[in-house]
Image 1 (cartoon, rainbow, N blue to C red):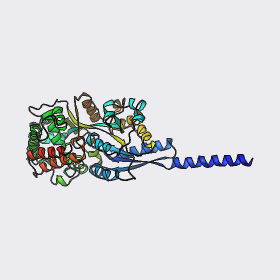
Image 2 (cartoon, one colour):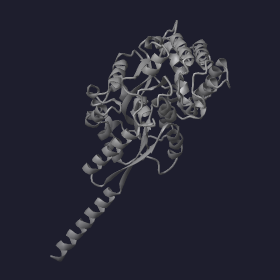
Image 3 (tube, rainbow, N blue to C red):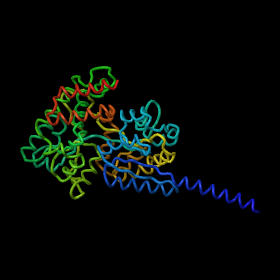
Image 4 (cartoon, rainbow, N blue to C red):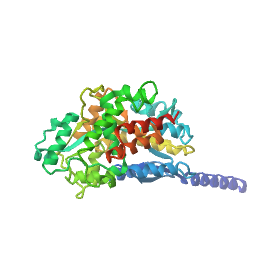
Length: 420
């Protein structure tokens, strides 16, 4: 009897030890926040997962925009690095993979999990045939407008369809003492959206890929030179709010949400941010809010349906516990992502979720992305962290007159050549 008791005691101790080990599993989830409401929902999803997986804790870490990017660089070098990190894909992901900072989860994703996801979106989370994460949502950069302010200035929405028409609209708005644009110049990347959008319209997919692949004219070639010159056309009109270089992207979004400007160039996530950052948390009423695709340019070679946007998701970092990938599968699954669509947070990458979109603006973006012949990932992400910084810096410098259109392309090309 004593022997049996001892065996039972040992088994009990082993069970308790196993439970304790399981209870000690913490998954650190690092989120780049787009809106407080979405972050609150993500925390709710994490709690739901914890309830179904006793012993696993999801620690949610939250930062936004540029602070997130700066902090992530430091955290990835730490032994206490987050297990799941937000990504815009592209060259930044490639650099992280080459540096050995990511976990290969190909075998986990293949099969049922992969079948739930948009194939092109899943491909954006991979590098050299290995999958390092899973996509969550798709984005498009568009030109948002305040219909009421345009009407006050006598501007028709149709004028925004072309670059020249938009420049004319800026002049009309100024004549009516209405601020044309708000922009988060402190973060720099919002200004690059003008430059990269123009480059896409002028040269299309071929121009960017020729420069990136070093198979044709580089970033100092005529396409990017013209994009810089056209951006300077806008800059010379002084279209941005006073002190725009000191304003972050969220602050500029709040100014638009408060009705202080008629135009703002930003992705579809802007819909929620201009609300949450406005003084009354309501933003521009839906009946006054609208958007058009990035303006077309005269003689441009890009397909009119081409868009600047991205495929976003989360990556698993090297050495993460298996629970990290398991939670990522839960989060990117059809059920959870259907909720994201229903609540108007994102345009999910999970199959069978887009039809759940209740938000009319997001439904239009989803249609645009489906019809696009080409989606250009953000330059600062696609070209990697080092060149991406130069891309953003030169756009900000051009917006303030610290550099010339010719120098923009030269500096980006010089940085790109150093990547060889």
